[in-house]
Image 1 (cartoon, one colour):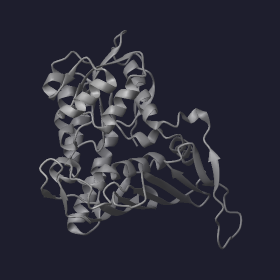
Image 2 (cartoon, one colour):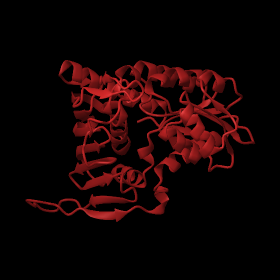
Image 3 (tube, rainbow, N blue to C red):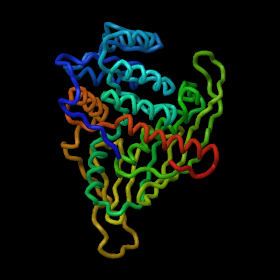
Image 4 (cartoon, helix red, strand yellow):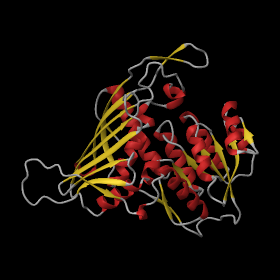
Length: 368
């Protein structure tokens, strides 16, 4: 898997604060601001959002001297980097404009609406030697870093299974309101892109193996929801739940279930890896520990269920993976040696998402 590194001397960097803009101030945009503001050499110069209520909140929470209601205002400023945290359909035009201006970019996931858009942005960012990052934040969970290192050392042996569950419940109620995330023209897909982008990226990140083919099945449980603005019922055009079977390199058997209608679940994301020398279970809601059955088989055992909890050493970073993600982006801006989930990883993941969409539509296996 391709990783992007930056090192001092490869880019010209200013000696003063990095001037950064944030486009999109929903919940995740606010998190980006709070974490960026912790770095003394970063100055968030502007926050942009079309929702005036969010801008008022930005003024109250962040004390921002400059607010904008359209991206054109942001692009008129002498910035050096931008965070794009807007509806998925806007990622491609906003990121492209930023790259053309020579700005470094941190973009939320899913990266784009399709792999063609993602590939174009990859080429553009690479040609201009800019820092480019997709917010695959779970790579920065300490237990995920620890598991990746364990698998790189071969402690799982030959990997049989990668099994993922990512379950949320915020759409389980039929009274949950309509939003842009439920419009395929705005989001590209439902839970598949929203949660599946994390699932597919983390599976490749942990194992170092790529997806070869997938077969997917999707359901929409609640076909209409009330628009909180108009008060009218609107059709839901995306998936509420998705199941995916897949084949990864070296014959790894991949399965995943994603749902935003899993009553009782908050942000339950687990990844289990089973091999002929050990098994490992990552739970992102417990970022500082890893469940493991690391001993290789020495004799036949009919049932083997002896997972134990292992704490993650502090060397794997802070348990606040959002902060760790921001820190990596800032380090890259400084020109320090750092590994990021780049636009290339965004493109890789988008190819898997596109194959899943084709599989849902056609009902068969799809090559990546």
